[in-house]
Image 1 (tube, rainbow, N blue to C red):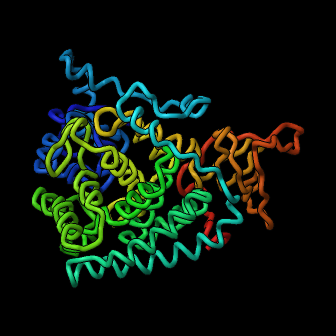
Image 2: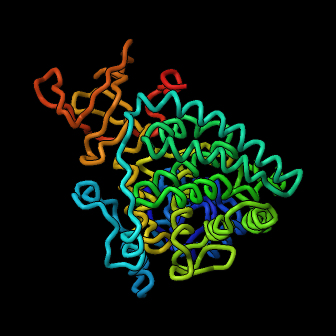
Image 3: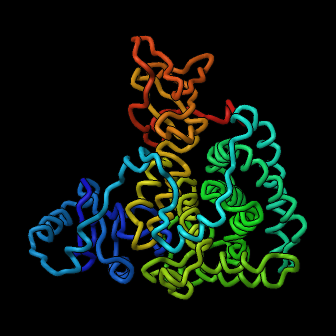
Length: 435
């Protein structure tokens, strides 16, 4: 049971399950930990107003204080405001009009340059080209990051050529590269994270209808968001526990290093440096390095912040396990307004759909399937591949189903998605099918 506790009421022995802000914005990068000393409590008080404590994993002594804290009255305006945590709304995916509201300045600007990108190929047709592009982009990214370390500058030609191919594939059908990035999310974090951020930013920009030249700028920026990490000590990058305050301050320097590398490199759009500079800024000014607030953060900076957080959450990192894509979207939804622009969060959720490509779902037949491709008219009816039968045993030959066509199940009812499947519930390696 997760119990909301004000940070001033914390004590040793409490198990912290969730924070009131993204884990990536704090030194506590290890998601879920037992409070062992006063230093941890002081850090939590510095960064958070409240946290969620796992009553089961807390010690017996801590449980007494947990329930004592719950019994204490709190009637401050701040506490009342914090208690109203918004819930994830499935209705977002049932709207017919998915455009950015034109009542906002961002929406009006996007409406002036919206480009329509029809799907040019189904995911099965795009996958062979996407695999090759993903592999070549991985090699190029490795070389680009190596240049950042050894030369302090980047090869703009290599960057642009790589992003040209990725952009073209995303324009044809974003789901192929999104699927591959999902499958690769538990391997080499630095390079695959960079490629995944680039792909997701491109898919996001495509969804918003940005012109091709701006898509390429977004993709390049996504690839380079964390290029400054190349200058950080390996001990910090590979640390498996939470960072000390000093280590966290050092880690934040990757933004400055990244901007410096871009500005020292020839032939790279200056806007990329701005996107890198702002991808850790937050709407309520709690971000870094400058503590900018909503009106001071550029649109692409807002988009990069959302995507960077999402990709980190669904990835296997040295200090934290991955979470299921749908859970990551729920977390972003709960963090909108305070940390991420509300319109942009809802549009990103629209972009990926309620069941992101690569995620597992259970059907009304009890079978388990993986989402392969979205239906961009009916988001709740994607194309899926059925891989486990109703007893959760693997099929010898997986079955493709396009739910928009209302295929009939063995009980004469149309197939429907019953629910998402928690991360790691079934031991299925999708690489067997696609890599």
